[in-house]
Length: 382
Image 1 (cartoon, helix red, strand yellow):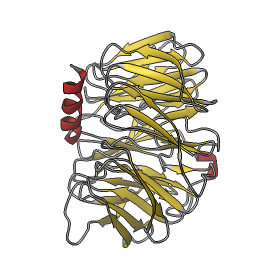
Image 2 (cartoon, rainbow, N blue to C red):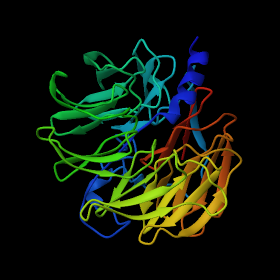
Image 3 (tube, rainbow, N blue to C red):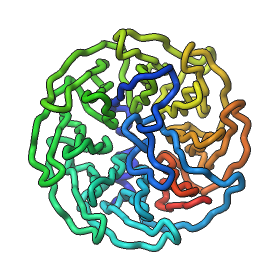
Image 4 (spheres, rainbow, N blue to C red):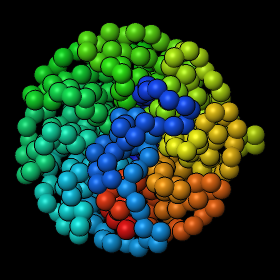
């Protein structure tokens, strides 16, 4: 039953939207306060800026520390917090595993399959959306349900927690702001198309790039829409934010840099020969924007100019979102391989064949890397 549902999830990724965040600084330079600590990766892309930059030191030589058979497809990217790994599974479960050995601490039934929504951990709770449109709040201590909130469409976005509020987008074309404590509705904002990807927040604003081809800036305090910027393309990637710029890929085969201060598009990148969509969410660090493409390539783009620095060709499309840690890039591919690339030149330093496609993104914390595969295997490298 659930094996068939995974293909529905994969086929539906063309309907999408994204989010972005704002902060001061130069293009491609993330404020350290916005990233995760070295022992935590508490949400999709690590922190609210969605830059996919890890502060944990990863061993130069990797090996498999443990693997865990989850029983069904994993499209959800892991979260790591307080010595535990949290992963959503297509069978309709949220798993909590020990980071040390991969043993199951508890299993929570969402009752409906989990797609690409990735867990977010805060205040002793873990939040996760399912494909029936329900957002779940679960105790990290024992996996017991605290509350649920039903939206009007599928949830493929990942939740983000801001203070006492949790933000989530739904395929009912709405962004919701809920109370962390009890899931009560604080405000909601309707858009003109699906909300697929993950919100990012900075300076009191939530930034959203959506399937309505419009960049939205929404005030977190009251849900007031402050401004919109048309960018003319459907997007499935969650924007990364560094300095005053949002970086995101589109289904029009481009990566876009948009400045939230001038409210202008700064550059558009497209490979000169291979014209395929960018579904992967970009990692932004050390002056580079690194994104996977459905052209089977990993692209590294100069954050300031939009010019290509390097590309690396895998054997399958790259929907997995890269992570930058130190001077290396970590990313999965539909070819079933997990790649380690040099950040400066894109040369492959190591690869591991998992045996199944990798569309989830790596989580990096405490010197370890965790990623789930489409055949239901969770692998920890270190």
